[in-house]
Amino acid sequence: MPYPVFDEVIHEPHRLQICAYLVPVPGRDFGEVRNELGLSDSALSKHLKALTGKGYTRLERGAREGRQVTTIVLTAAGRDALCGHVAELQRMARIVGADRRTGLRTR
Image (cartoon, rainbow, N blue to C red; front, top):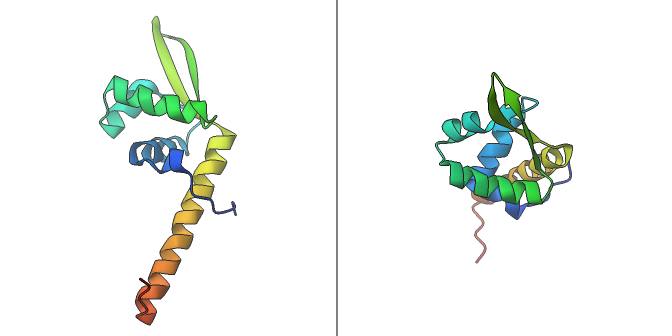
């Protein structure tokens, strides 16, 4: 189980979606990710710049059927960061859930 740690880079909703979408596969085409998340090319590029800058994703460029293709890969560091972030969100949810069950309110 990864150590729970809140990650501000991954927490941004679109970045969280990008990372989660990449988990089950070795990589996905830029266009597939763009279409699945409903982002423009520039918006996806901006988010990937932030994720790649932290080492969470990697872009692999190549040719397929005579055209240039960019594949987005979630790195091991990205997978660890995502898992740690999700673990922290779960930890926080347990705290909130316990607070609701006991009726305690902190101000």
